[in-house]
Length: 299
Image (cartoon, rainbow, N blue to C red):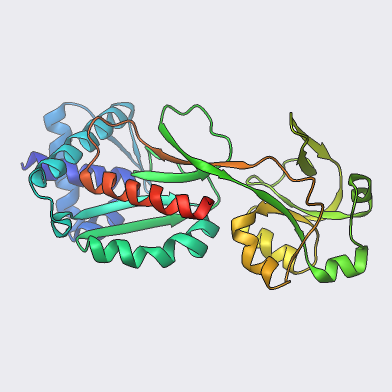
């Protein structure tokens, strides 16, 4: 048994939670892949994966072994390019996650330049509003907006983004232009929540010391940032969103800023990655590129 190859197969199955998808991604017959993993478990003397008809999950021992495999494989990748400084020598796949609006509005237009500089790198880019499990889903790094929970991961602060209050011209024509916080009693908000069913807090503003909330009306709650913006454009209510994603719409007068003196507290943006002793060089390179790119985004 080729132990290194078996480890690579195990990591891919663990990340994709599927023998079929892992076999397709690696270009291997499913039966061959299954036999390699069985041989690996036999050599380790423990079960690494729970297999069901619907999905594959790591056992407790499998979680520990998965992390060690990631470290070992990252170290091997690093050794392959230890004395090579030509960008063309960097290769391998990166798995990254970031908010949808950040990916579509800013990062994707910049990616051709990065991939031209590092033609051997492949990128798997996940974009959703849910918070992915960095370790279990095998992400090399993710960008997260908002206050972070204590997850044991490494967090690199990238900066703060200002929040702007927006409404569509149609909405303001129908309900009037709010000029004071008291006016919000007569207005509706589009509510945003990652988990539908939670209770909306209302209009948020920062008074210089703490965040405060004012109850408002609003018949629509969404769990997608793209839907959030679309609902505002449709005249369903006021939204509070990062100014970077609203600049074009504000400049084109498709959205209008309201209550500019009552903004929410600026939102922190962070780069999150697993605590590994040896990150592959391609991961280091991409994270440095991403950090520099985000400086221009936040500015």
